[in-house]
Length: 336
Ligand code: TXA
Ligand code: MG
Image 1 (cartoon, helix red, strand yellow):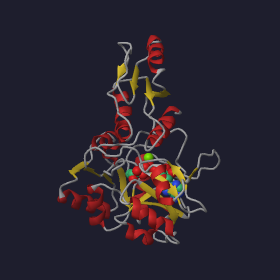
Image 2 (tube, rainbow, N blue to C red; image 1 turned 90 degrees about the horizontal axis):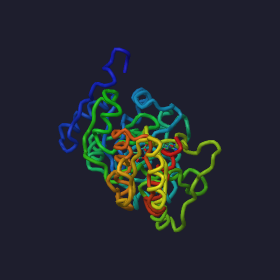
Image 3 (cartoon, protein in one colour; image 1 turned 30 degrees about the vertical axis):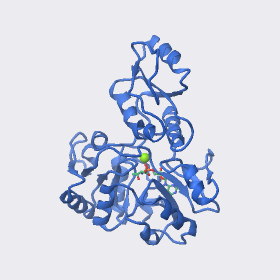
Image 4 (cartoon, rainbow, N blue to C red; image 1 turned 90 degrees about the vertical axis):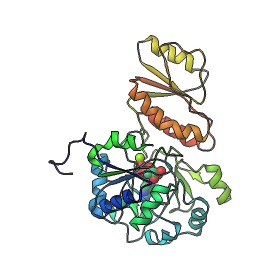
């Protein structure tokens, strides 16, 4: 990471996540304080030994991320919760049983094992057990926690394939484990259990409805504009280069025609095919509904950029299930 390191466009070492020798190489990189990108069911993470402050610093440098934005610690199993957190409420264990491994991050009071570098000095830590065979193999072999944000540069679209990671981070990541495309496609739901009432800080792969089923009541959802409860949850985030506009199915034909008429390169995306678009409007392959929309969302945002779109018009899915997380990401992308 010093000035005489590899240039930014150099490529990292890449291993097939199904290959046990690649897992061994990744563990060796982690043990010497290096950075390993690995697949999870949500998005790819940029991992480092969660107990090594120097390795954690490298994550912030590679991402260009402000150091007060805390990182999620990924652990191999729910049984490890008490190593990383203290005063763990009963509800956390119930949720861990219900949703781990899976796309739920719980904010808990941190144990002394967690360095300040991970939490930005906060008294809490985000924990999750990812549900991806490669992530689990890596965590099992490493036998420790991995602090990992999404493996993209700060403010950009999260990566859902190994090639996305390589395109974003180049040789700023030491090793990339390729585990194919991510199944969920949007980040984990972040649930704060450190206060009096459970509160959703970020909608994600586990829907509010599913949480309510287990909790017996829907958790609150923080949407204030005061001091950030989840630092790093910026209003504008997840942004491609193209300007994103969220539109309804009824608006998309007229709006795309208007913008194209002004000479802008316009791409459109939505759950299903759109009839009546002008010839010069780029129609991205439909993303489907529900889980399918989430799975394809970030790949389409990246594709719009590759195709040189100035504007991307996105027809949002219904606000139910993981659709709530999709709408959240589209709104943040649109605000940039
Ligand atoms: O699905 C995911 O959660 C992915 C994969 C790699 O696990 N990770 C991810 O990490 O999205 P990241 O760093 O891009 O987003 C994590 C967010 C931070 O922006 C921050 O708001 C919140 O988690 N967070 C982490 N620790 C926290 C804490 N102690 N208190 C409040 N918020 C926290
Ligand atoms: Mg991120």
